[in-house]
Length: 288
Image (cartoon, rainbow, N blue to C red; front, side, top):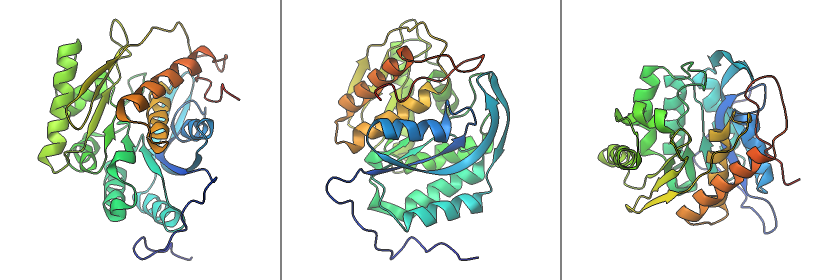
């Protein structure tokens, strides 16, 4: 079987004027298409971006919850990333559920190898650690590699309140403690050589679902949210982080990109229609 070309030394054709930029999602596969790879591809399409994908884990799930997850063998993930990167230039990369320590390490190595081909400022990590039903989607060893290595390779991280508690050991219960946890996460990355990390803490479980943006330069913004009475809550974190990347690819500034991503998810929730018997998906393509 032919091996994919190595990343180094490959000449990739630049995107011509009028052609859509190419975004890459590295995440898990959700067969109900509410989250993960297929949801990310819909978000890319909704924003005029051509999406490519590398599957890091397979799941058995529906709107009723996750039954099982199975990581993709790290060597296969590595070959997929090498094969794609040797062919095209990515305008940005979104990282979601990775499912194993091996996959986290593989993605970290990949980002290190491509270096400046995609700047940190257009690499967004959504640290998917557990399903909404509480099932663990990344073992402790994988969380350690994510903290110690992957955080050094990305420019954005978008944890929810539970995820930032796992990553920092600090439990946010209000604005002050949320900002402290975000600063701690930023400091953890800086201690390992990444002083360019922007942190967005999504506050869907707060009394008012405001999101915090802490920029790499220390600016703090609170983006006001609203509670939306909807059963379409599956994959909202995936949609938000991918929409954020789309805004960054389009050239939006930090606060503008976060605000537009938040508005996109709210509109997609309001436009959702019934799918399945449980927590359904948002309507990613509501504008079409």
